[in-house]
Image 1 (cartoon, rainbow, N blue to C red):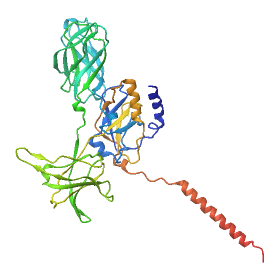
Image 2: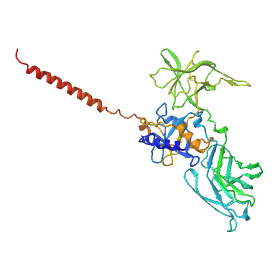
Image 3: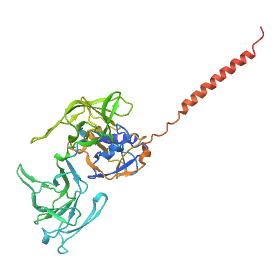
Image 4: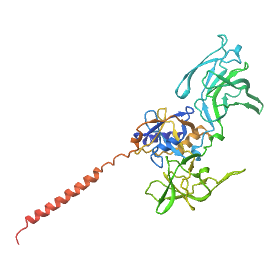
Length: 450
């Protein structure tokens, strides 16, 4: 923890000291939970289409005051950027009367940004006498990933058994029964201990409430976590389909394509309905005057129909992911008049950032002048992991609808500043040379007679 605090003290000299430049677009970030320390946000197609640089140096995270926070870009397979399996979510106690155990209470809530509950009030449906809060509500509005279960942590030591009806809702008005009866148990006999502290959930509800079905004491809840579905946490391959045109360059017949973003392309394929059997080679470059570089092939592309249709597999790029704008497809045989559809696949990258400054946070992209500061993010996350547990990972954050900032004007490079030091040096040199010439003429004019 001490190492982490020292690193945070050093960060203002790097990330926070920069003056925010003009960006083309801004995406508000929706945090899955509070007090997570660090978050991860998966970049989408719009971010890749907005950035101006191949290395995504102009993609950054700003706080509410427009100051950049410590952030770094990672590939989806890097351990630092792996998604969290469990997320701490807020919960609220709901009063219920002993006479009405098993019935629901009327819930009214005050909402903050993105539907998150700030304050909640519940009126019991029975008499005015209420027991200690035994019903409770869990706010899942900040989680957009697929969920498996809710894990409830309470103060250990006292044997207990409590049964609940579990209900889900999107608006706190209409409720749907998820489980008619769910039991939470903690029993111990000598060294043996029986613990059931989780409830399976599904359906994508924003709010889940637990209504008591018996007169058991209220659970001394300390924390509620949602466990995410491990299968849905894997980043699926995204495909970008490009339409090309036939061209001839230095006697080479080929199809040329132009991409619309700086995607980390790692796979290539041809649309099934657009080509016949052929042997293909894929090349790319980032500028029209740059040389072409071999990316994949030669490989044989085919499609076979019938009872068991099959097609050629996707081709990985031999040189690793490439962000080039221009792509060229060549064939060993004769080319068709119509260019086939080129499919380029990539896995979205992840921006990891620390919860510094003043929330809410926003992701920005598209600037010819801005450059994201370099920070030791793996070391910072390791320090947080030592403080919060070995299984801790940055919590998810999600991109909201983008808003335009400076637009295309942010992509125009600023004028090259004049080097006044060089001009001053040349002026001094010219002045010195003039003084030497003047001194020489003065000596010649005053030369004594022979």
